[in-house]
Image 1 (cartoon, helix red, strand yellow):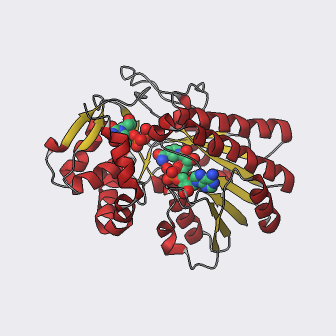
Image 2 (tube, rainbow, N blue to C red):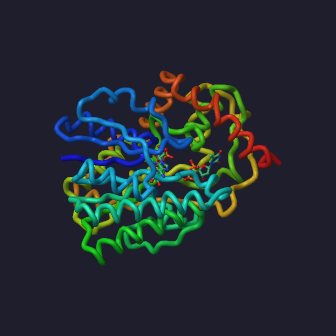
Length: 341
Ligand code: NAD
Ligand code: TYD
């Protein structure tokens, strides 16, 4: 079995590459990544010398490159993680999201049509369903919830999902889609809420909370997401969508306070800043389908997962300090300079 994992130098893709290389020594894992600002080969250090692993640098939206790679590698499966993934960046530069998330996906799908494939798996997000009201805790996203996106990011992911489903119906391509809630865990780029707050708190910097901090996210440890994708690849039904989430809803303020308490830092570091435009209020996944059909169950509660994650950031300072000492420190100034009221 040869699997091309795209975006394997990013957060979830990197964790998935570790998972697959370790669990399936007989599989060949080809990690295809452009190494944008979010891609980091240091994440792959633990597996880079394994005989069943190779890295290829390239752009999923570069048709000539992708077709040549398929010609050479003849993969059995594609797992597409490669994406522009940060909502705030999609608000300042939507076009990059259309290019990679939509055109990159259709380029991969076309290569799958041309060369044949056992499975194309699209790693999608619960953000395609839009948001839920805060005063209706009884509502959850199911696979039947209509797509109703808010940000350029979620719109690009929804567009990609629709192409994936169209290629199944029109061309009979064997596809699956997973739509997961917010992930956290090791190797998470420190522009996203949890690693940003951990790194800021450790530096005794201000913790920028958007709006009133009452927005709710449904957190899942990244290794539980990787386990879900593994199951879908091996047991999922072609043409199906699987929602992935572990019922770990927290307000942003709760998350930030949990991090501060774990690091023994004062809540006075919290700084409420201007809200994100179009900010989704609540995400919450109903994982009944993947649980009942594939027997998936998360291993981490939020409390054990966040503790493990904070410990990882404490033990792996060099990984994230390399990131925030370079290009990213300029990004922080640009993104937050005019948010401070
Ligand atoms: P990430 O930003 O950490 O990583 C994205 C990776 O894709 C990077 O390594 C980057 O170099 C690579 N990439 C970007 N453009 C590329 C291109 N044109 N060609 C090849 N590689 C390219 O993202 P992540 O948080 O690991 O998310 C991975 C996937 O999971 C995305 O598709 C995202 O939409 C989805 N997802 C993320 C979350 C989350 O909470 N982070 C939740 C659900 C779904
Ligand atoms: P993020 O990690 O960007 O994920 P997403 O927007 O895809 O859910 O943000 C998670 C939540 O945290 C979201 O409600 C926005 C909020 N947030 C802040 O309050 N401050 C920050 O500095 C960031 C990056 C996010």
